[in-house]
Image 1 (cartoon, one colour):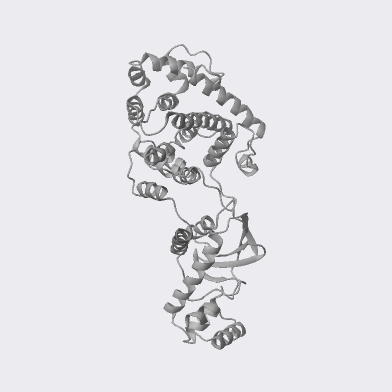
Image 2 (cartoon, one colour):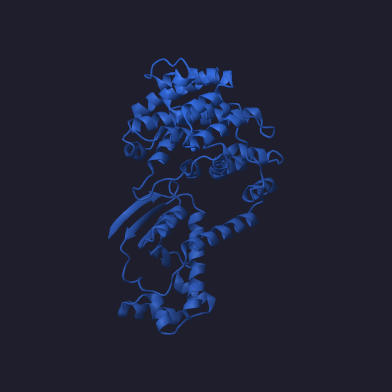
Amino acid sequence: MAVLFQAELDFMPLHDILQWIDMNRLSCAVTISHDGDEEMTFFMESGRIIYATSPKPGKRLGEYLTRSGALTGPQVFSALNESRKTEVSFTRFLVERNLISSQELTTIFAQLVETLLIDVFSSTSGSVSVTSPLPDSVVKGPLQLETGRAIFDAVRVLDERERDTRKRDEAIEAVSHRLYNEDFELPVMPGVMSQLIGLLSDEKSTFHDMAKLIMTDQVLISSILKIANSSFYGGSGQVDSLQMAIVRLGMREIVNIVTAIQIQSLKSKDVPQDQLQAILDSSLKVAFMASGIARECRLDSEEAFLGGLLLDLGKTVILSVAKDYKINQALLDDLLDTRHAEIGAMIAQKWNYPESIQKLIRYHHNRGFGGISNQMIDLIQIADQAIQTNSEGELEAEQLQSLKLSYEKVLDVYYTATETFEQIKSL
């Protein structure tokens, strides 16, 4: 039996693993250990759940069948023994011997799976192991539960139970409802940014067109030249004019610089300026950090820059929606953490940034599965972690390895990125 991968549940939630298996149509056994030594296993064929076992009394298929009245205890016991002797799966034996219909068996099995999933989802500790191939005792059965539906039902029931057992903050519910229904205004892209992106999308545009547009704002020109001559672009030589900056750095890099400058000047009547500025400052640091790492790794530095710059912009929308409600800070922080990525992707879409940028923002908190990772997401996560911890936090060894990046090189990029950030703040 081969082990596909193993993980801790607090690092890699079960629903992410099951969805990954479903997406890739894998056939495997998923064994979960939590709450001590208790184990349960979900058997999946082509991404669907075909059987599940648990050693815990009351949470086994045979007990569910007797509790529902579909079968008696002796019938279940006899069927288990006979199926083992004939080497036929228990569920297939039940249906072929007309002890229960396939439809009724599926309904009862779905209830068992829902209960087991709720047990795991409500626990934050434990480990999971994914192995293959499937044992002969479970294959060729009549059960084929859709994994996505099973997860959705378990999460829904778990949420309903939590509402019944503790008083929920009504304000957070109202904010969540507005976010779910997209009842909010996305920030408006500054005018110059919009025009510059339009130039980039026009194959006939030249750097002269870009220079002509920027030349209307002398303050912007001065800022671009200061950044172009900063240590972040060290080694490119002295840049004395806007035209030279465009030629030396490229049109895409100039758009990134202008985006950084103009986003730093964003204002919001709905978000306290200190909160807004903290988000914008952090985003700009991550942008320079990500871009610097991308250069070291020979990846797209412009894409890394924009991804880092826009990845937390969704938090400003959540704060603007939450302003009218009294929300417990812990709940608000959780909402900011869980919803900002999808809203940030909406902003990037509204601002007409490429689909690659939209996806990078949307999935920038995702982890790789089974040794398969996305280098740009790894890069963004390393940059974000370094900035949030002031370079003092522990970085993921696997991510550094996937990028062939040393910890010392990350520190070098960090110091250069933060120095460039301070130069921009002083403009």
